[in-house]
Image (tube, rainbow, N blue to C red; front, side, top):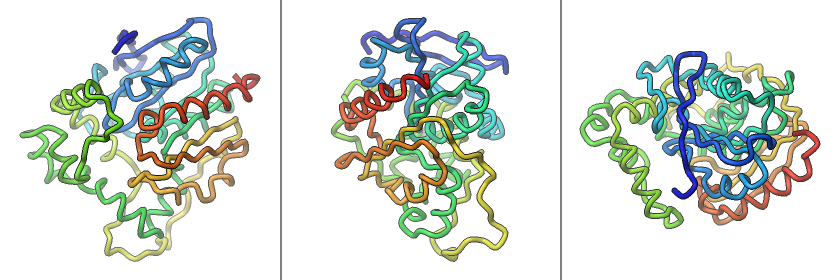
Length: 304
């Protein structure tokens, strides 16, 4: 990819992250976090645009690409994944930054922002099609649409599928669990890059371990549609920093029901919905995402 050059960055925890670091080094910092099953390239359109005026940092998160790939499930708990990004900022000498995340990258961006806001390290958040943990878990218990859409997570967690992955790579499991098809918006070079990455067996299980280490419970379809008697929302602080949530309305995995109640969890919320896009909104509708981010970042520049 033109202009892409990765640097290995050593973290204090002993891992290494491969990082695309683009733009002026003295400019305000945007840290971009990709989701499953992608890489730092997920945000390529936005980084090409914003690296003219921002320092744009996009790591391959642990388990992905050229970054460290520990194989133990416990290595992928949320606290470790959040810690990676704070340690990455430390290693690069970055005091504060805006966090930008999609899918699993957004799922990590939520707690990063919540726990980084008090110290001033995380000053703004941009989150695309990644649910708030408390709202998502409640939907999984109560909403038939979300529960049905999330059954693939049970397949990703099932060790009975490990032999399939070891023999054929991740694409085989994606076909089995999701009936995965190539999006017409995905450039051929990006498709080829992902298909090659999905053949790296260490990466395959690193990626799946994000699901296996998650505390989110996905009930089977035949479980009661009711909250368990002992369930309570996780004690997460309210997000008070300026936050942009971008939501593609045709996302089959994360329908718009995830937006209900979000304004109770985020004090300074800007919500932009994008019709006609599936889950990977940042490259299915890149111009719309760039426009939403341009407006938000411009209006909240004082917070940076």
